[in-house]
Structures are given as structure tokens and as C-alpha cells.
Image (cartoon, rainbow, N blue to C red; front, side, top):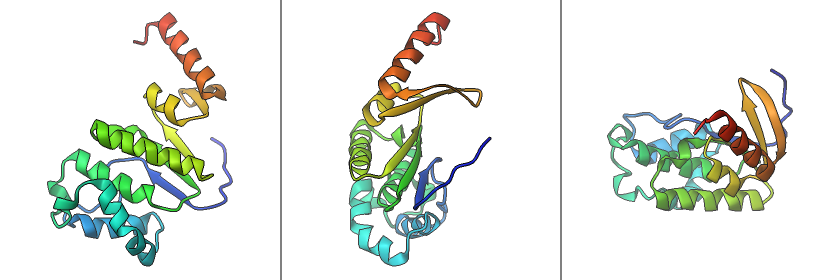
Length: 168
């Protein structure tokens, strides 16, 4: 419980295919999802080539999304969200569902977004991703904050706790 004051534009990628319609093709879903995320049509058009190239699903853009694999859907959804000029982006670990090459490309994109001064909030159990992307971490259990500190300290404390409690 609580509240947050948000100043600026927020973008999310919290679930595979959120905002995608299975009967629409990739291009149509880029426009649909971009609109749901708050992008204006001219903003989507201006970024369309970049979104498509980043996704790596160029050959399937005119195929209905219902025929995409979950990895292809994640690629396209992440590509749209990553090109939203949001001040704050929420990502859960679903975006890491793609192959190794796409995962690395996605991490690089998130790093560039952070370097540009925007905020990326990563919700994940993947300690490697957290170590690579985050400067600050919250360790939470049952909705309560256990530790709030620099990423390195939180991750090390979590690992020590996992060893003591045999979470592995």
C-alpha cells in the first residue's frame, strides 16, 4: 500500500503481449500497442523502422500475432516499449524471455535509456540482470521491503540469506 507521485510519461512491459490483438498483424499491433502506451501515431511512424529493426521479426510483420511464438511476441512488445520516450519504464522479467542475442541487445537498450537520464524499474528474480542494470535494489518478501540499498549490497545479502535458508 502507499502512493507514488509520478512526474512524466510512464511506459510498461509487464506481460507478454499486453495490448496486442492476436488477429492483427505485427505492424497493426505496433500501432495498437504504441497507442496504448501513449504514443501518438506520428511518434510511432517516426520510430517504426527502428522498432521493426530492433525486434528482428521483419519477415513476419504481416502475419497475425496469434501465429507468433512467445519469444517473437516479446521481441515486438519490448521493441515498441523501448522506443517510447517515457521518463519511467517498468519492466518485469518477461522481456528476458527472448534468445541470448536479443536479451543482450535489450540490456544494452535499457542501459542507454538509463544513461539518457530516464528511470528503468526492473522487477526480476534474475540476479545477473539486476547486477548488470541496476544501481539500487529493493529486496522484497510478501510485499514488505527487507532491504533497500545499492544493488551490489542487496544482491549479496540476498545470496547470503539464500545460502542460509537453502533457497537454491
